[in-house]
Image (cartoon, rainbow, N blue to C red; front, side):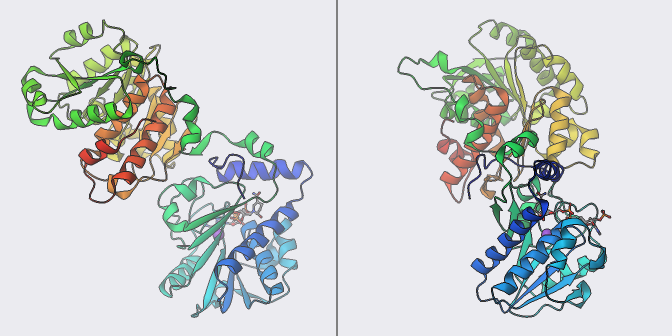
Length: 491
Ligand SMILES: NC(=O)C1=CN([C@@H]2O[C@H](COP(=O)(O)OP(=O)(O)OC[C@H]3O[C@@H](n4cnc5c(N)ncnc54)[C@H](OP(=O)(O)O)[C@@H]3O)[C@@H](O)[C@H]2O)[C@@H](O)CC1
Ligand SMILES: [K+]
């Protein structure tokens, strides 16, 4: 069933607040658990009609409670079901205790479970309440089930996956399917969690959307819903200057390709004009490759300042193949002072290694918007203290965004886009083919084009990450960064 905002993600903490708010508004917790467990039973019957036996592994909390409900529902349908529990089921409390009482069969100890051909495992050991590494007994069960290649259906999340961060807690089941409730959780989308969840089904267990919306803090799966209303409307009266003038800084003669990839991608993404600002020694090399992209000589910060006099030059991309870090810092500061937008990538990020506060000071009070696009190594260099912390990718990206008062795009197969105001989005459709030289340069150019078009920075970055993934999907196998450029489309 479609939820009103399918892109919302709730962390386990937010989910338990939603649960508490639902119960406070007279929705019975027991009824929620019944619907959840029955949804799991329906899912396994639909997908594994030929199973010889369902082995339901139940934990000590409400995830286990869902397992007992599913077990009883399966027996009612005539299935062969065995239940194996972690810990003493007599110690269950609340709704889980009631669910246990509703299970008409025996409960065996988890260690008694011996996987057999024809089994399907229902993993109801831990869900949202996983608080630390899974105990040895569970690690052993995970190893046995994995070795025997038994299909696993996870209730909520595979046991061992942290719902907030997607991180592995000791070990985790690799599920073929996960059945979750109300919304997906970050652990379904972030890696490695996403790889352990299999196909995720979201069931509406009857909690009204207004309760969900009240607790949702602003974390989404990236997609057009986040940025479509900020797209630049197309108009017959448009001319190129209305679509923004982007300047991309080129590196020295031996490393000009990266900036050309950014510039080419920006034109395809819909920037009205793109100028490559080249050191004098690179002009001839760049000229040999350029057609629609224009060129100007740019050797010093004084050259940058005089280029900034024309207010139509509203957006800059700095870093791809740039090289000179001192110059990169002085250029970035000049752009910030003049109130223009900046996408800072690659060498532009390295120029501020360990000194993120200098970026924040430069952009604080500036009318210009800052977007940085670090991969993992660049993130560690720019934000060493944040990178060392324990948090998940979303928490780290948000801390970094606050540290620079700008948008941070943490690149990877689960790119996170974070805004200093607390909003964040996770991309889930980036094809593996994007892991190719120059792909990041293309992304920087697309985001810069969106900024040049007048999009607010968070939306420009979300759209850019989405456009980048879509371009890679259109390009298909054997993708190079040049192919990627040719498949870029406007937001
Ligand atoms: N929210 C909703 O709307 C609905 C939620 N529903 C379901 O509830 C689930 C969340 O339930 P939950 O909060 O009870 O957490 P759950 O995952 O069962 O684990 C908690 C227990 O495990 C224990 N424990 C934790 N880590 C451990 C470790 N490493 N090793 C050993 N023990 C460990 C922990 O012990 P403690 O940390 O307190 O010592 C506690 O006893 C959710 O995933 C969904 O399936 C549905 O019914 C529909 C409505
Ligand atoms: K589980």
